[in-house]
Every structure is written in C-alpha cells, then in structure tokens.
Length: 244
Image 1 (cartoon, rainbow, N blue to C red):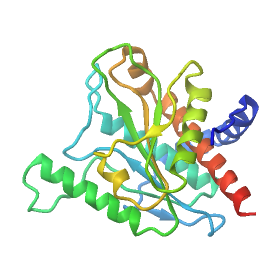
Image 2 (image 1 turned 120 degrees about the vertical axis):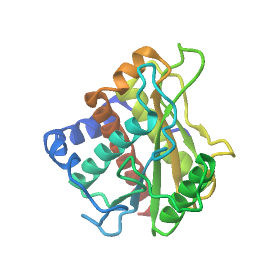
Image 3 (image 1 turned 180 degrees about the horizontal axis):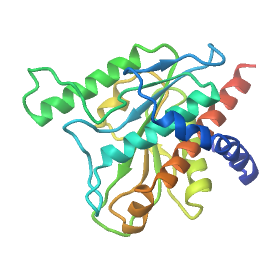
Image 4 (image 1 turned 180 degrees about the vertical axis):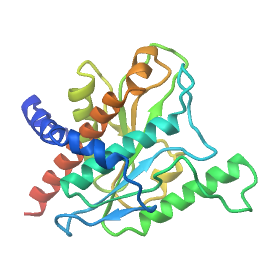
C-alpha cells in the first residue's frame, strides 16, 4: 500500500516535536546505563529500538573531512532518544557510546563486528513489542549521489514504517529526493535476524560534499531526529487506527 504524505500532516507532526528542541538539548547530555530503557506514557506502546549503526572498532564510512559515520549515527540516535523521552515514547538504545566492550575471544575487527551484531540482535529480540530504527549514513563512489533512503526488513509492519520514514525525510529534509523505501539486502545481518518491524535509514551520503557538511552540523542532525520521530508517530497512529 502506498502511503499518502500530505505536506500539512507531515509538517504538523514535525513541528509539534520541534517545539521540544530547547529541552532536548539538555537531555542529550544525560548519561544513561546501557542499554537504557524508559517506559514513559502509555505502557502498551511499542518500544522504539534505536540502533546507532557501527561504533567501537567499526567506524563505518568516513566523510570527506574525516568524520566517521559511527559518530554521526550516535549523535542522531541520542537526539532521537531524548525526543522520545520527552514525548513519552518507550525506547531502548543498542549503544549509547562510541565504546563497545568486546570479549577476549574477539581478536579481529571482523570477529568484533560479528559479536556486536549478534549482541544487538539479542537485545532487540529480547525486548517485547519492539520496533527497530537503525541509523546509518550512505557512501557512494560517485560524489553526486545524495538524499536519504529507508530500507525495510521482511517482518510485518516494516514496509509501512519505512514508507513513513521515507516520506517524512523527503518532505522535511530533501523535497526533491526521488528515492523510495526499498527491501533491505539479504546480507544485512541485523535486519535479517530480528523478529520485530525494522527499518534501516541511510540519512544521507557522507560521500557528497554538500550533504556531508549538513550531516556534520548539530542543527541538521536534530532535524533528522525530529523527522524520524514524526515518522514513527505516524506509524503508531496508523497502527492504532488498524487496531480500533
């Protein structure tokens, strides 16, 4: 089913969350035990699983100015978690630091990545009524490529969430973007091995000079976090309507 994204509806939800920006700045600096869990508001709400892609020994892609993708991902994830807390949305984070504790048996970067992905999948699968948003940045050899794109798992509800994410990101961040929500590649371990609705969102291309400059600013990362919150809220609204 193709989602309808009226400008007024998306911007209404987007601006509603933008009103909490000042308070968000205070919460972002808050240190929580990891994985941190909040059960605010309606306890029947799904738990938003916020996954900041990469981290630890795996920095991910690198921008033209040398900024690692993992740093950008984590900052957006922390902003998203702060907004979720203010909005009363239950959530967890698969990581809230650039540091990841690996077992002594993980000697190589490859083995550390495998351990970390399995650990994240376990956290998510052990959380009842979870909904996963995994945050990443894109990279492409052709420097002109830009724009956010969402990818969805095979689990029920994933395609619907991805369409809301894509539509909201396009409207709020890049109105000229022609990218659409698409199925995730089968070699992406996390989305292949979780049992909940799950999307991976490539927020932009750090290989594109203009987009990288935006992604490296606090203001644009906050806009991304607000857009993701808006999309998630629309997903919850649709789910609630279906259940009535």
